[in-house]
Length: 231
Image 1: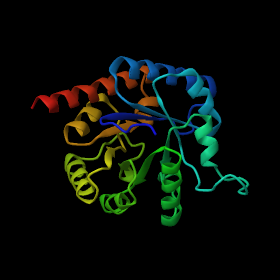
Image 2: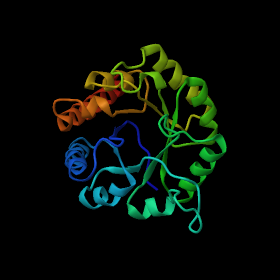
Image 3: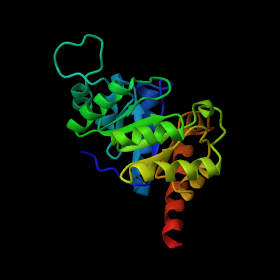
Image 4: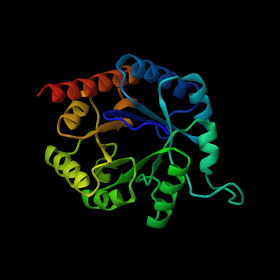
């Protein structure tokens, strides 16, 4: 199983990039992970998992979802074992663009644990995040759905209260704050306020240089963590 360390950055390309364009950004992120020592989770479509695994060394290759089935019948579903074999060592679950039922989410978390895959589970509010913390995911992404893609980050009080609330329920869960994260300063701020990690989609892909934006974000996270240790 991939060790889950804090802090971290997640580069979530969703379905905006694939094949060679995806690989270009992944290789740049791979260099950043090597240079900074920061764990970087990099998502891609199912079809590109093996491509990224075979052409990067430092990234934590992350599937964008999966189902809970076992090898056998299940036409059209996403087999966890196949994702793992293709190179995914982590998986997103319950994203706002691909939500699951409570029972389906719990079963998928269980399957991921059986395969040694890190689980990144999404919640759209502090209340939901606290409830999902009881399912014992590795990382909880607490993001107000209405801020996704807006470029407006959650305010400081949301970050502080959400991290505190989740840790009170399950101190072992790492807390990621997303939605509206656009700049290195946004990343620095959420880590300074207590989050274990952060990440972005549009904040990276809409930047003049997505490759440079990944580096700026990673360096900001490392700097925030170092300053916290020195306090």
